[in-house]
Length: 201
Length: 201
DNA sequence: GTCTATACAGTGATAGAC
DNA sequence: GTCTATCACTGTATAGAC
Image (cartoon, rainbow over all chains, first blue to last red; front, side, top):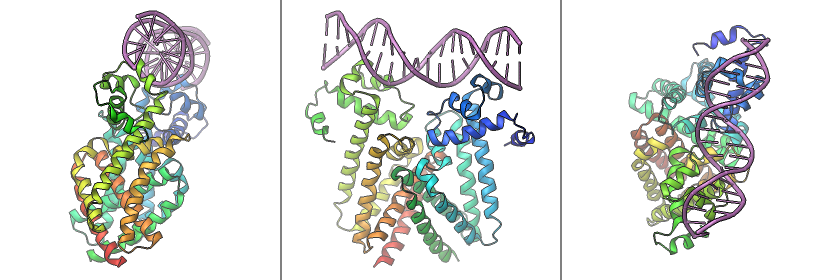
């Protein structure tokens, strides 16, 4: 994210770095980290494979760039939801997005969740940086529950529950290849939000 | 599971097949499918690597055997919970198990969830067989919610929500390396079960 | 049934010309 | 900055002796 501004400055066709990250973003989601080769990324971005190493020192470096890009995406999406002044409406705006992404999740799961799942087994630093994506979700939800009247620990627990359902539903939608599952779970989540919000006040 | 009886019949030290499945079970969980080589499994099971192919035609065959073994484990665990006559107590027995497996989940995630996550991106048949593990959970929970008074669709949606929280919490506990997260979410799930159960009757 | 040796296909990464 | 060629290595899988 520190260099994403630099990445975007030149939007000429010569912005190979940006194209590599965009392609890697999609391919890592669809095929997983281990299942995606640098040759795959290079081909999709229309870059010669050896040239990747001019922009990224190692494959992990490219993965890191993808994680940073996801961070930007998440921040932007949550900022859009923050337009609404009502915290409960914000949370439900989130679940509306969930339901809408059913087809997507059913095919490949949540891009951030599956990435964390795969990197979570590693003991090097890569697992910690992917955790930052989930932290964005949790802290955002935490703020909403605080505004709804929760104390600090309640807000945290509710926020984790909120994100858990999101991630769990994405996993199950993908496992069962069922987009409607996301729609149904978004409804469940809405009902749960109401019980929590009503109890908090 | 069809040949698990055969596997168990001879418990001599010569039961190499059983040892291979046991080792693969653990290693696939800790390192992922792609991250685990047949050499890893062979070494852990104290079997020469070339010999694996006498028992399993391909690596995917071994993965399939692991999935079948997980199926047996899940069935046994759920059957143990069924000893309790009260469906609500059964569900809470499940969440107690969740809280207890915090350390485990924090290090490597849920063995079944991470397996589904990784295989879910594949388009061959392997993704469907791993889905069977999740079906076991969902159908079991579905039966409990039916007994609590839910109609068919409500029971299904509640069951999926139940398993979603389980899976999502496991993912987050692993992502944040936080065993306590599972304990807190087990409590959240208990509270949710109560609201659902009380509303159903 | 068990083991050794090895074929074979990638895959990440580097060197160096242009 | 870009490209070609290639290295070093790993991983699945097979052949065949014992």
